Length: 97
Image 1 (cartoon, rainbow, N blue to C red):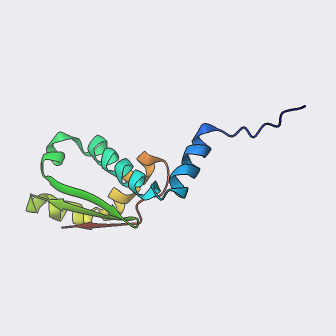
Image 2: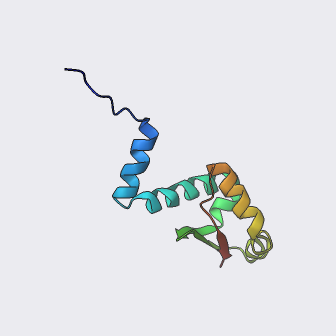
Image 3: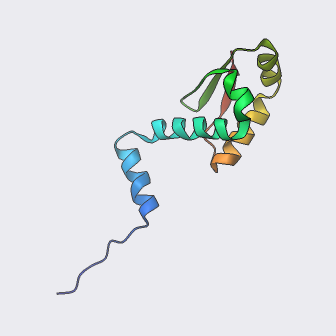
């Protein structure tokens, strides 16, 4: 008897599992946090209270008033930088607190 192949690339299978079990939002949040750390460097990481992604909305909280001001003017740039680093559009808007 001939065996049928249902072969799929592993990445597709993992993406489907994450979607089915509702874990893709958490995975996106992890990707954004990792990208933030890789792109911003240790000096800015020390001044960051939290990086939170909810429904494609990124919230940043900063210790420094100067950084808050600087990042509030650079919201579009931050969004583009993170999405480019991740390789797909996860972040749709940015809020700096």
